[in-house]
Image (tube, rainbow, N blue to C red; front, top):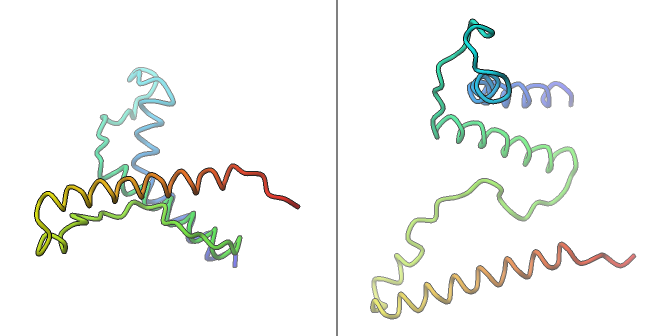
Length: 125
């Protein structure tokens, strides 16, 4: 089992390397060129952060599932949803779409509140 975990962590390290180097040079340590002769130019883009974030989240999900054997019911990686009302637009008038949006967002908000309150409630033994 250790070899696949080492391989997984190595992949995460590789995918986070650019972010790690940038942070080490410019945030965690002084960005003084006299004290750091190999100082890299600041070059952090969203794609770099996304790549690192995705690698960390995927590894966390795999370790959670395969080592801890927990059942994770949520996806920690954001999934683009696009227009959630696209199918309704074919037959629902625009004012109905606006009402559906309000209903949807109220439902999502209520669901989040309910799940968070359940997480915070002490479990009886």
